[in-house]
Image (cartoon, rainbow, N blue to C red):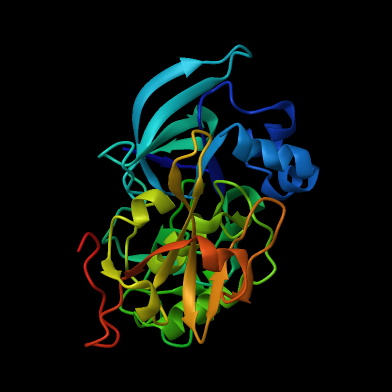
Amino acid sequence: MSCVGVSVAGLWAAPQAPRAVDAPALENPAQLERWLSALDDDSRLALCRDKLLATQLLLDTPVEIIERTTDNLGSEWCRVVVPSQPSSLDARGYPGWVPAAQLAEGEGCIAGAEAAMVVAPIAWLQGLPRGRSLKLSFLTRLRLAAPVADGAARVRVESPLGQGWLPRDSVQLPGECFPATAASLEMLGRRFDGLRYLWAGNSSFGYDCSGLVHSLFAAIGIRLPRDAHDQVETGLPVALDARRAGDLLFFEKPNNEGRLVVDHVALYLGDDRMLHSPTNNARIECRRLAGSRYETQLCAVRRFLDPGDPGTAIPAGT
């Protein structure tokens, strides 16, 4: 296995998919904020319309390299699968292409590792070799480099860039966890109110609809597929009018052939409220379902929290 060696790497549809405006996102270190600020409405829309970007991967995420190639500029690319992002596209994990320069040798922070997980919207990894620091996304996991003493202000971690430290109040340590409840999901999700939608976004620099719910459920220990059309195939089916806080709402629209397909997902908060990352050039919001266009497009509800045992997850795939 290899792992991601930048704060956030894009998983692209092909080595030829990135445009000139995407160059900052392909660098090492990745310049995510510079890239996002350079995207205008049209170039953001094209990420979706032309399906250029598939998803995003956080620092130290393990990937399996399947193939290597060189693009027309002489840059090396790796076709990978991502085990931590389940997908019907490949049983091994989400498939796509990453610049080889954004990968590092090593297995990365595998499931079950003694790790610190970023639970703040962002956190700075500091104290790296040569005085470097790195802005990390929510849910980034890095192995612990040393035991954490009671009252410590810093947590020492291992990363592909060497050892560094994270502020103690920005991370969750082994044995700590958010309860698997609707309240936890709402508390975490409301931290991203107003964050601008990003097609294929799966980091706190920008989320798409399924990336947001994928990340929120991962934070409470429930692993969902990455995409909405796969998410709707998991969980416990619930009648549309029996929805309750913590359920996922799925919406459908006609595709280019006129066939109805699931193309959107939202987290239901109860009391007719839903939290979602709406669409290109919009922002994450909490809104009422009644009277909206979403009310007429609602096609399925799935439950992942056990109502008979609060704090317990229903196994994905039920």
